[in-house]
Image (tube, rainbow, N blue to C red; front, side, top):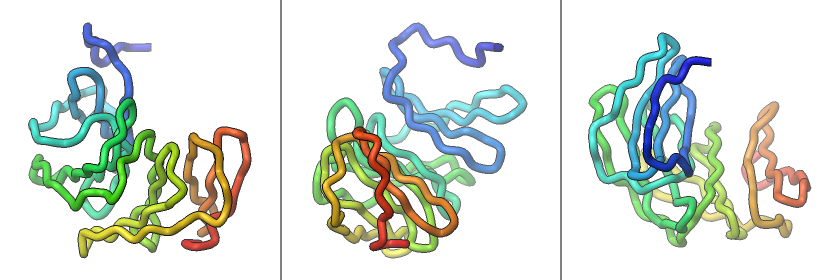
Length: 166
């Protein structure tokens, strides 16, 4: 295994997402954003004001970041790949941490660690829709999408079909 970046500071709370054979990474201490491509090169992204350690997902030319990890956050940001610029997006109604995100024809769906709602983000209108989950999932949650259906897995290893957005 080849080490592509050696950082002497502590490494934790890194969010990642894939797009076009590259990996977007955000987090660490202090927070840093970079893109890793298959040729083993790292491009450090421009400094902006993105929140630290959050859920990340690629959508419509942007890397979108939501929530926080070690400390819950209600801020969100997006990074435009083509211009290397950061943009603020509307704040969440509640602070989230340990966010899991997916993308579908409904936009971006995400859920936080201890909340009982699922959020849908409409990128074009810069708004959120809140969906109350009709089941009592345990703390840590992961969203996944398979065959046009959305599922949530919780820390108790329960799997729920999220019928509200499927």
